[in-house]
Length: 298
Image (cartoon, rainbow, N blue to C red; front, top):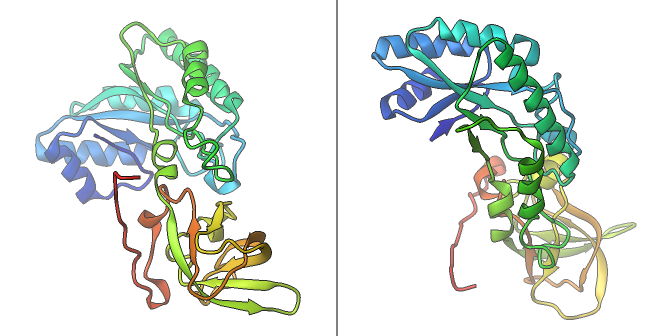
């Protein structure tokens, strides 16, 4: 188990030390000092990897890029050697690796190739100082097909792993770690909702659902696209804005999309909701949290 995150609380760090987790991914000198202080107090040695900000722009939504110098994540490249030297002087800290993450929902393999090239540069720089690490964590980021989940239910893992095999120069015995969250689970879940009302507006008609941004916040948060299907109707398609019941103008799942003619009570499927869906739900507007159902029969 690895603990990553830019703001680790003391109790979380202590829990990780108590359970002997594999590694803390450290994002600042201030965090390193706190981990060392708590490790000393607990009589433990903390394994750490340093998250390095590679200053690489990923071809994805601005809100889910994480590898630019302007982002809050990671340690600046120019500070990498200084931080490792600082850690080496701490008796209760054991440096085991480097961690990177450039963003999420990335479909351009060129972004991952750029990351490989940057890691190669940084490793060579460290080796010039006789610094060697056991592991490289390249993060995740591989995207999925939100517009065609049936045609492409599984991401292009072959091309993804081939990119790293071709371009990343690992050292002998060095471990390579991936964080494949969304790419594995996104297509495994759908948000199922009912139409409460079909409302004819001045210029458009709305399909108002009983699900809203409290159940699936991605469209409201960064205008994310999800394929939407009317599971009940086989009537000719009409154009709708698909919206939720929350008192926010951003509570919109999609605008001007074609659905089979909607009626009150129709079942609507919002696809590819297995990642960043239920886990990000809230009770805002006095809403109940959505219920999840799991089956292996599909």
